[in-house]
Structure formats: C-alpha cells, structure tokens
Image 1 (cartoon, helix red, strand yellow):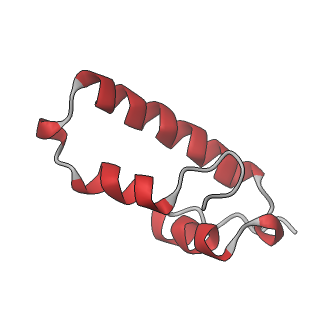
Image 2 (cartoon, helix red, strand yellow):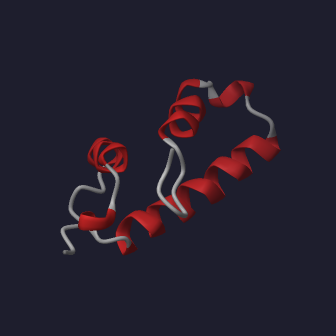
Length: 69
C-alpha cells in the first residue's frame, strides 16, 4: 500500500518494466503525470511520515535526499 498521494511500488515497477515501444500514447502520458505527481509528493512529505516501503522506493528512485523531520 502506498502513502497518501504516492504511487505504489507495484505501479512503479509495472511502468518501468514495460518497454516504451509497447506503451500507448495514453500510457506514456499517464506515466509522465504519475511520475511528476509522485516526485512532488516525495519531495513534500517528511521522511518521518513515510512508510518503510516508500522510504525504500524513494531511495531507489533518487528521492532519499528528502530529510525533513
């Protein structure tokens, strides 16, 4: 389960493993919007309020720099 406003790890993995050449225009657009929305949520959410899985996902996707307490 993801944190409020965050994309689940399952959704992130699904989007990442499907080749771009196999995605429809709608899927490309959806990935872009979801990615930007998740990036914003990752930046705004204090690390102390993130679930364990979101902390791992953020670390893997480069959002581990957020050290708000």
